[in-house]
Length: 79
Image (cartoon, rainbow, N blue to C red; front, side, top):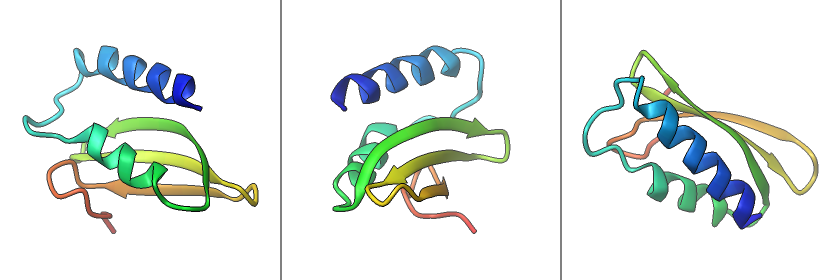
């Protein structure tokens, strides 16, 4: 699990060199918050959207897929 997260973070960090992610974006804190949710099995994908938020896909222990959009500065869900 931790290997998958580390690989995801490294991949996302490499992609950030080409994307305009705002200063102060707290991706590690956002990931930790999602991981600490009791029913989360694993985080599948993290993307940066040009509209200014992270798009994060993760799976629950039940197998259900969850897609969220997170504001990088507040860590709150974007609607």
